[in-house]
Length: 151
Image (tube, rainbow, N blue to C red):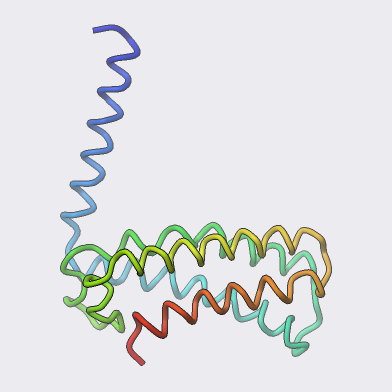
């Protein structure tokens, strides 16, 4: 076997092992994982919302830092919506997630895209530039919460 084939084979084995281990996660652990990341996103959204609403002075560096952290966390929680993780620990995740995974994935992708646009806007350093993209990110979050999160 040549070196390139060995590397490709190793990559396939590693990918399969990662997939198998993600599927073997106990539901309560998956729930805690996703909840922790989503709480982290909420933690960073709060100060940005306060700046956008004028409740806190706009600090371009803090805003950019928090927007960047949200964009880095944005792809992560979805791994925690494993089969069977609709129960096993307290969760507000609706069963519709597992019934309409395609729509759930669309919402994930919209949220991730909106978070990247917010980072780009935050790099301009102006409050006016971030208001629209912050609202778009909030709307992306709300769309998913409205359809897939129990009140």
